[in-house]
Amino acid sequence: MNSATGLLCPSYATLQKKTGLGRQSIDKALACLERTGILRIARRLCRQWVERINLVTGQPERYVGTTQATSLYSVHEPGAWADHLARPKGRRAPFLSPRQMSLLERMQLLWADLKAASKTEFESELAKAQETIAKATADADTPPPPPARPPRSRGLRSASPAARIVHRLTEEVGLSEREAALTAGLREKGVDAAKIPGAGGENLTQWVEALLERVSGAVVMGAAQRIEKP
Image (cartoon, rainbow, N blue to C red; front, side, top):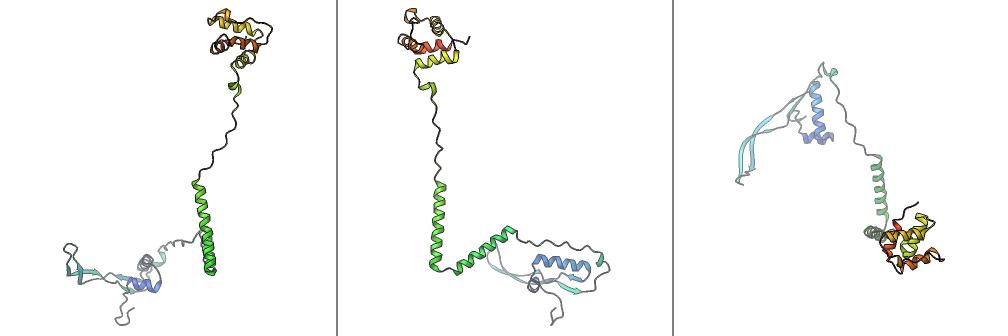
């Protein structure tokens, strides 16, 4: 209350300074007091000279305008209905989460250590941190080496044509009379019978090698692949 005039018309700046609250909190408190009848608020307007710079011409101008003055408050006994009004719901205080509190505590400890450290210690720790950051950045920029591939088993790819033909006849087909079956296949492909060696006492590999000296390997392999299992 103004002791000189006896008026109760504090401004929002004065209320914020006296209470330590924000403008929104003061608005809510005044609205609650007005609903209960404890406060009666008269919004006051006043006419006064206003000086400003014209935004169009850029020249200073002065005119009489209506502005909002501080509200006038009067205190009364609360109304009979005040006990039946719903109480305003309070909002939970925005307390920090445990993780934020732990981070703040770490920062406080860090600042305490920095204040206690000398200039030489601070520079040495700073250099170590910079080296660690540079190393981590270099490791991140360097791509990891590709994983080592296991050696590929070439199998029959590296074998001779004769060995592959023999494998076809023995392992995949499993014929007992292999020379006769391959001879019949070559005759069907139009190979001259004079080029096909006779089945003598040599083993199958020697017979196929002798055959490849006279007939193309592609033709012999084609005939061997056409032989089906019995």
